[in-house]
Image (tube, rainbow, N blue to C red):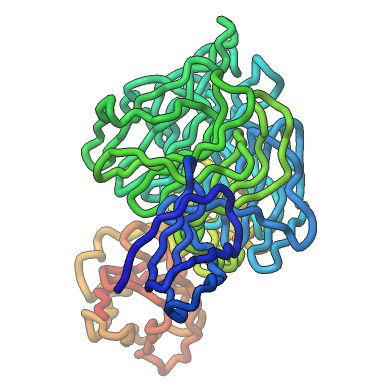
Length: 592
């Protein structure tokens, strides 16, 4: 015989002892009284029947479908108290950065659970949703300065975890600058939506933009259905979700009050915005929230609002399949102004502020789990190496003509993107080099980009130049040597160019075989030709490919040539032989 019994409990504990005066086999479920908390599952009781004394059962606590938040006690160090900051994973570590005033980047080691201070931000950076892409951390759409007129940051800033250095990235178009923006990564591109232009004062916008780090290009997309700021965006199943936030308006004494209830969705495949029905509005309107995704649920955490002084503890989840919300377990400490990391089905939250506004700033970390705590995971970041040729030779080039070479740069080693920040040339002005995109641009792991080198000599003789590429890969810079030589244009005897045999002092000069196979052929010379006889091989554009001199004894009439190792392409060439002031030309058809 088996019965079910439901009990109400008022506290959470790791173990709960329940005394049962019964001779029955029982299966009990212990639920919370009012607000979400841990659910305690008790297996079927198998003690003795009819003993007349209580059975005392130790019961381990496990999280229910509502989940649970737990504090993380660090092994050493602690997160610096800060808010309006970001928390993001790169490789196998968590990075806490930004916040009001200049503060250090802090690294949380997932294995040792230690906090380590790194370099400070280059300027004050706050009110941003950081993103990690191919091992680099991007800050786009941040504020700097003080309340209520914080200023939008004019550049993208990039933190390199492997070198512990900040890089000043691309300039944000002046007409699209704002802070407190929702930022996501989708298909290797960065998307920005919403935000406000003048701190907390005024100028909230519904702008939507795309930035492509690989090409350093900025694209304006269709506006979102409504403006919002002080929120974070997320992508679920190929759709961009905006939930929470407000329209800050300190200019009308409504800094916290104008919260946004609607949920807006952008479908990337259709390039279209929609708004969920009012029945799917966020249950607890607030801003300054953190956003995470677990499975098919969009989770909005914490926040601040005009309805209460303390920061919100709320954790609310939107099922993107049913468009219905549910309440999850509350934060242990209400907080706003920070960012969530999702790792191995757990959510991590650090720092933030405990009350509406700016104090108290927090230096704690919590983790959320639906069913059980999992070990955090991540792959170690390895700084990539930029592969490039050490030198590029243009050979001999006729004066005032241009020779073009392709110069390939590749990210072939490591698992981190390489930011190409500058390409400069020094040396002879006859050399130029061009890049396909406006600098700076990013070269993802396994990707290549082609630069174009050109040589247009204006004087005869050898010339050199160097190309220096500054980047975020191993070594920080790569140098490519360029060389070339200018030569005068070759002259041709028009009377003799149309035959494989030419007159030479009323005798014949013959080349065989012609067409020439494998670069080997023989020239029959006229009798009586002795001494030093210069010759040159010229291509159809008039460029001299090689030149030398023959020293012929009197009895020699045939001279073998071997051009197999000269890397010549198949095609038509001209062999020029000089005697005194006379130049004779014979056509040679090379075949490989």
